[in-house]
Each structure stands twice: as C-alpha cells, then as structure tokens.
Image (cartoon, rainbow, N blue to C red; front, side, top):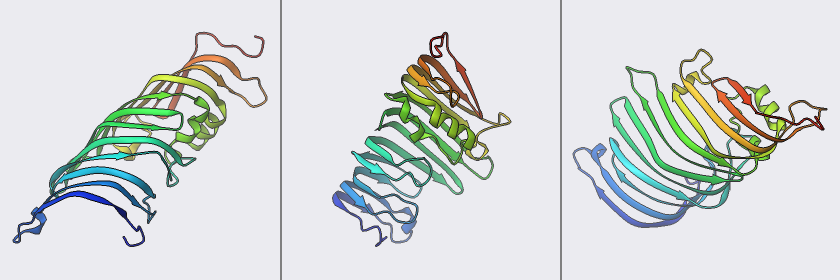
Length: 239
C-alpha cells in the first residue's frame, strides 16, 4: 500500500463500529481527486472521485474518472486512452454467495464510447454467472485493434481483425454477454456472447496483397467463437 503512494482529499467520512463485532462496521465516505501509483496488478490512476456507503455484507459506490492513459495490464494490445468514466456499483455478500452489479456505466476512450450495465453472481450451489448489456459507438474503426481482449480472443482472429479493419464508423453497436465467464468463448453454446457492429464507410483489407474493400457498409456479427459478416454490396478495386 505504501508503494501505491495514495493521494487525494476525503470530503466526508462516517463510521459505525460495533465493538463486539467489528465485521458489522458500516462506513460512509466521499473523496475527490484520489490518485495512486501502479502496484501489483492495479494500474496507476489519477483524479478518481466518488463515494462509498455500506459494510462487508452490502453497499454501493459511485466512481468518476477523467482523462488519462491507463495501463491495460496485458489484457489489450495498447494502453487505454481514457476520456471519461463514471458508474454506480453495488455488492451483496451472504456467506459464500456474492452478487455484484454495475449501473449507468458510461465510458469514452480513443475512438469509442459505451454505456451499459452488468451483474455477476457466484455461490457454492451454482457456477458463476456474468450478464452484460452495452451500447457502443465508434468513430474510427482503424482503432478497433486497441480493444480486442487478447487473453480470451483467439490469437488468429485478433491478428486478422487488427490488420483487416482499417477504417469506418459504427453507431448503436451492441454487446451481450450471458454465462459463466470461465467457459468463454462458449464453443459448445454454454452461454451467449454477441457483438453486433453496423460498420459504415469502412475500409476492410480482407486479404494481404489484395485491394481493400472500400468504401464498405458491413454488418459484423460476433457470436461466441465465430464471426459473420454481411454486406449488401462491396467494391474491390474497380469491380
């Protein structure tokens, strides 16, 4: 913790601490411009503001973060050039049962913006379950490579799409995830992962050495471990 060198300003702090059971302690805290250095697997952060109310069993927090560059910790191919992040989060814990949720999550970064919600449950009786629903807008498809989750996407697909998508815009793309995250990419349909991207004015280099398809309006449909592409018309060079 000392290595993190946290800095910031606490604007409100209250605590209810039962002396006979400190695990029932409840706190309410608000802070502004919290920053820390990178430590262990947590990236450096600057200017985090928010609040937290609750105890070990349940509570909620709101977070807001401004423009900065965040390390992707090896999960993506590039650092995250963040413009803005905000959201509300809550937790409930009962023994080994855990429920987490996020609401009104709003994030914008280089060439992309997304809004959505998520929920996560785990218990001794059931496998973990993650639900995500988000809407996405992209202003430059050439930056799509920055956001491919390289730890879970097949390497061949990451390499192909990173070089193939060379431009374009997407409005009202959607992300749906439902299932046990440990079983992703659901090759036996144990869950659902789907990203639909209506890409407009795109440039798509489908094969090295061949002319790129451009200008191209194409619908990309990622379903579990597959990709489907549909376009009403395409232009290849002068054809």
